[in-house]
Structure formats: structure tokens, C-alpha cells
Image (cartoon, rainbow, N blue to C red; front, side, top):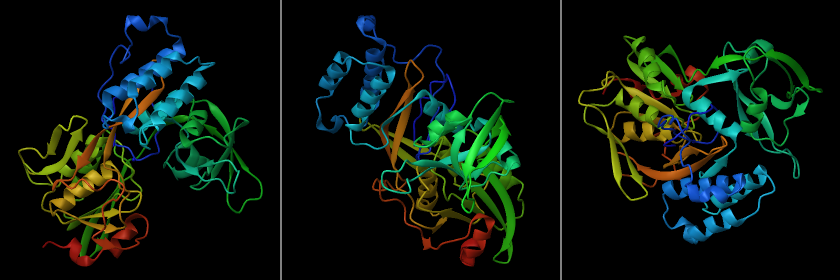
Amino acid sequence: MHIVHALRQQAPAVLSAALSVLLLGAPTTPAGVLPASAAYLTDEQRLAAQAWTFTDRNYVDRSFAGQDWFQTRKNLVKKKYASTDAAYDEIRAMLGSLGDKYTRFLTPAQYKAVYSVATGDVAGIGVELEAKPAAAAGGQPRVAISSVVEGGPAEAAGLLPADVLEEVDGFSLRGLSPEEAAAKVRGAVGTKLRLSVSRGGSDAPLVKLLERATVKLAGVTSSSTSAAGGRVGYVRIKQFSTTTASDVSKALSEMAGAQAFVLDLRGNTGGYFPGGVDVARLFLPKQTGITYVVDKARNTAAYTTYDEDGPFVATPLVLLVDSKTASASEILASALRDNDRAALVGERTFGKAVIQTVEQLEDGSAVVVTMAKYETPVRRSDINQLGLPADVSKECPAGKEAVACIPPDLLRSR
């Protein structure tokens, strides 16, 4: 799911919501340190006050959902907390009172997961996780494998997408979020873990012994296929990171002679915000609008292409999208369609036109705060919760086989 992400770099991590992330760097001292007058506060009160300060500094809705925002701070610092977890619960309640599902709290483990996705480097077993709803009322939510990284320990052990995680080293993973489960699975490179999973069609859980390794998430994969009487370059972008634009450029450059390109954004929930902007620059003419970001003070920042055409400005282009295409993916899709550069094939997109910043608190936890909204090149601001409609509504198969379901005229020069 976009973030202008002030990832205060003290640890890495994974956010499975639709996000776009802008890494603002790593200060040498914790951001948002409270003034000396706050020295009388307990550690928990100081943590809650710091979360309020970050939210106050960044939140886009200056009415704060109509509440007395300064009274909220007074309540936070007066409250006696029995534990850090109690302070976490109060921070969650404070952020929840804003009525914005994207403004939320991250534990230290969840923050680490966000950072790992943004940079593409993860130490673990090479899987991506997703939430699986409880099977019955009163049941606990579960965590399942959404994809297996090629060449990683999980693939070598025979783990598959849709496998449900049960236990790691005897610790039950039921009721945990994907981020919390990921934190339990990760560990030092070279260490081993015993993982129990449930698989459809198997009566008993499967137990796998794996060795953790450094895994590079393959955010961009590519291949070529035949369609519409010629060769078509197919590029799948799973998540935007700091290297996505260069990875896409490299993949396309290796497909010299392709008559058309297809970018597959299905299931791409976002990631690194500038990644979507930089990929758009590869395909658009010079001095072309990409997106507008409007902040809490209604200041507008325009993101455009540079003073030269993108290297792939002339080749026909099609984007594959679905209901999970969100955030940075929607920035890319709207930029290319609004500028008549590409058609969208598939389903209506997710609909997330707000941008978050992530700021780390002094104990390694963090708050994610909606700090801006974005508009398309033609200044459409109604994408949030509505999404982008597909130009051609079709259900296409996974992978490069989807190219065959694209109308041939979209893959030819016009």
C-alpha cells in the first residue's frame, strides 16, 4: 500500500499494507527527542508523547477528526502505564481516533519489516507473508505464504504459496500479524529453525528444517514472449524499492527489438514512493507531469520528468492491473494513462491516493502517519477509495501468459 517514509535507520522490516515509501535518510540521533522539560515523564509516558508529537507534526487533517488534540496529549502524559505494551495500546488508540486506516503504530519488529521491503534486503528463509482470515467465528487469524523467493531456503525446502505457518521452533504463530510472524522467522544468517506449516490436502502439519540466509527480494522479473505478430517484453514489478527503476531499465534494455512492453503491476501494493515516479520517467517525454503531492498546509509539489525524453518513450506500452494494484503502482499507472502513454488492462485498482511518513520512536517502534494526498497529472484527486478503472476489463492468467489476453492492437505502434 504511499509513504513519505522517514525510516529512521536503526533496523530493517515488512509492511503488507499498500504503501509507498520515501527514505529520508538516517540521522545520527533519534528524531523527535523531547525537550528537557519532559524529563519527569516515565519511559512509557515519554514514548506516548513522542508518538503524539510526530503525529501532530505530520498529519494531513489539521482538525484531527474534530477532537481536542492538545487534550489528547495531556491525557497521554498523565496516564500511568503498567508496561511498554500498555503504552503501545494507548498509542494505537490515539492513532485510531483519527479514523484513518493508514495512520497506525508499528512495533519494533514491524518497523524492521517495513525497512526490509523498502531496501529489498531480508535475512530469513525467502518467503513473503500475508494475512489469512480466521476460518470460523471466534477463530484466530493465520499467516500464509504469499510467494516463495526463487533460490531461497524456503524453495529448497519445498515450501509453497498458500502454506499456512503454524509454529517456529515450538512457538505458535496463530493470531499474529504477518509482520509479527516474520519477526519470529527471521534470525542471524546461518542459524537454523524448525518450521511447521499446514498445507491443503495434507492431514498433518509439515515440518521443515531450514537455515536462514540473506535473501534479495526479486522485485523485478522479466521475460519475452510472442504476441501480435512480434516479440513483446514482459516485466513484472512486485514491489517498488530503491532499485526498481534501474532494474526495470536494465530489463527493458536487454529486450532490444521488442515491438511492445507489458508492465505487470498486479498484486503490487506499492513500496518506495519515488520508485513509481522514476519508472514513469522511463516512458514519458521530457517536462511531462507525473503526479502532484498536496501536504497538510495545501502546498503542492509537482513531480515531473526531466529535461530529456525517457529512454523507452516510443515503444507501445500496456499495464496489467488488478484490485491489489495500489499506491506507488497507481501513481505509475495514472501517470502513464493520463499522458496517453499506456492502456490499463485487467481490473479496477485498489484506490489509495494518500501518502504516509514513518517515523521511528526512541525504543525502535514507529508511527505511520498520513501526511499528504496525491493527484494525477490531470489533477484528479478522487482516486482514493475508488481506484483507477481498467481501459480493458479482462481477467488474465498469471505471468507472461497474460500477454496473450491483451488486445493485439494495444501492442502495435499507433
